[in-house]
Image (cartoon, rainbow, N blue to C red; front, side, top):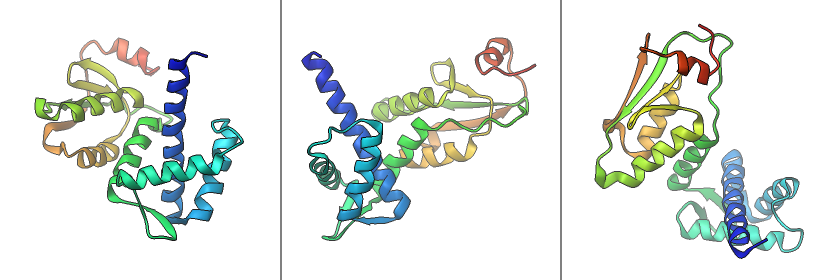
Length: 189
């Protein structure tokens, strides 16, 4: 394995470790130092992400870095999520989230249109990336479509990213030439 591949693997592991720590703390509300490490380490070991040696050290180091970044708060006994950590966790959950498909499609399209200013380019890029990861299909530069209800998820996302006035969520009965979209989402006509 080359150095570049090794560095990418380390970066992926660090990100996965942070996700697991945030998920673990979110599930319990607050966790003591003694509880965070075993829960996270157990999950990481099952996934084969952490080497057997130095597992606790990796977990504590990652949690401490998350405290420095303002994602967690540590009071000497417990770690707990900060509002910033909660927002990051929700974004990660959205990116990993596959919206539930109802048994039958309601034959309506959810169209998301956004016009995020250039000064918020990083946020615009993050929104685009999240939508791509969640399975939305791009119709045009800032126009995306999805066949199932996702209004609640988008309401939270717009608030977390602070772009509510720049994003429009529409429910559309009909889209012209949607045959390729129905095929993309494996929908019946």
